[in-house]
Amino acid sequence: MLTSTALVLLMTVPGLALYYAGMVRKKNVLATLMQAFAICCLVTIVWTVVGYSLTFSTGNPYIGDLSRFMLNGIGANIAKGSDIGFTLGLGSANATVMTIPESVYMMFQMTFAIITPALIAGAFADRMKFSAMCVFMVLWSIVVYAPIAHWVWSPIGWVAAFGAIDFAGGTVVHINAGIAGLMCALVLGKRKGLGHDDMSPYNLTYAVIGASLLWVGWFGFNAGSAVGSNGRAGMAMAVTQIATAAAALGWMFVEWIVKGKPTVLGIISGAVAGLVAITPASGFVLPGASIIIGVAAGVGCYFAATTLKHALGYDDSLDCFGVHGVGGIIGALLTGVFAYGPLSATDASPAGTVGSFAQFIIQAKAVIVTLVWSGAISFVLLKIIDLTMGLRVSHDYEIEGLDMTLHGERIN
Image 1 (cartoon, helix red, strand yellow):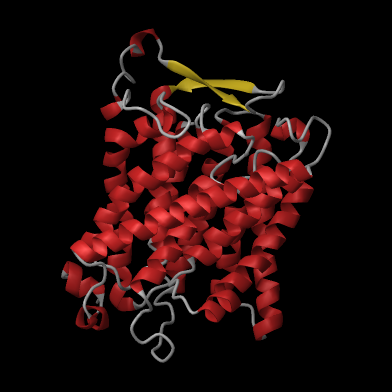
Image 2: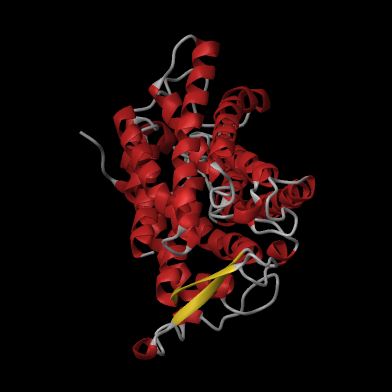
C-alpha cells in the first residue's frame, strides 16, 4: 500500500503535469506545470484539515462528520497498533476485509483527492487566473469531491448502499472531474484565437513521458485499490494493462482510418482513455472483458474529443471531459455489463454470473448522480468566483501567455 500510494502521487507530479504541459503552447508550459504542482500542495492541506474526515469518518449517508478534523485520532494508539479494516463487496457473502494502518489508507486516498481536481485543469488550460484556480480547487475539493467520495466509498454512503460498484474511481475521480471540466470550459469560454491560431502542442515528448508515467502510476491506482497484495490486486493490474493497450490501439486505428495517419498524440490519448475506463471495473472484471472496455473507450473517447466537441462548440482544451468524463461513463456502465460474480461480490451479480441488467441500471444511477451533483455545484462555484474575483485572465495576458504574465518566468 505504501508503494501504491507513491505510484498514485507519481501520476500527478510529475505524470499529469508533464502530460498536460506537453500539450499546451510554449508560452503556457510553466503555468500548466505550476497548476498541477500547486493543486497537489493545496489538496494535501485540505485533505489533512477536513477532506479525509468529511469523506471517511462516521457521519451520515451523505457526508462524514469532523471527528477526524486535522486527522485527529489517527496517531493515538500507534504503539498498540492502529490498523483498521475495510470491507470490500458490501452486502455480499463474498465480502472480504483487508486491514492496514489508517495512516496508510489516509495517505492512499489523499493521492486520489489530489489527482481528481488536477485533471480538471486540462479543460481550462491557457486562460484561467491562477488565484481563481486556487480558490476553485479548494472549494471544489470540499463541496464536490468529499461528498461524492463519501457516497461511493464510505461503508455508509448512500450510493454504495443502493449497490453501485466503483473499484478505483470511475465516478469519484473521472466522471466527477470530467463534468467539472466541461463546466469550466463552458463558463470560461473559448481560448483566444481558437480556430485560426496555431494551437498545436509545444512538446509532445513531454506529453509522452507524462502519459507513460500515468500508465505506470495507474497500477498503484487500480491494483492498490484492492487494499492488499492478493488475487484481486493481481487481476486489477492485469486488466489495467490489457485495457490500456486495447484503448490505445482502438484510438490509433480509428484515427488512422478517419484522418489517414496515426498520431503520437492520438495513441497516448487512447491509452489514457483506456486507463480511465478500466478504473471502475478493474477489480471486478476478467481479461476478456477488459479488451472490450478498452476498445470501447478508445473509439468512444476519440469521437467525444473530436466530433462531439466540435459539434457542440465547447473548448475543452486538453479533453478533460472527452477522455475522463466520457471514458469514466463508458467504464462505469460496462462494469455493470461485465462484472464477474466471484470478483464483483454484489447481490445484483451473484457468484458464477457475468454482469446483469440490474447492475447496469444501478451503475447508470451512480453515473447520473455524479454528473448532476458535480456539474451543478461546479457551475455554481465557478459563477460565484467569476462574480467576486474573476475567473479569466485579461485578453492581453492570454495573448502574451500565462508563464510570463502570471508567474514572471518563461522557457528560453
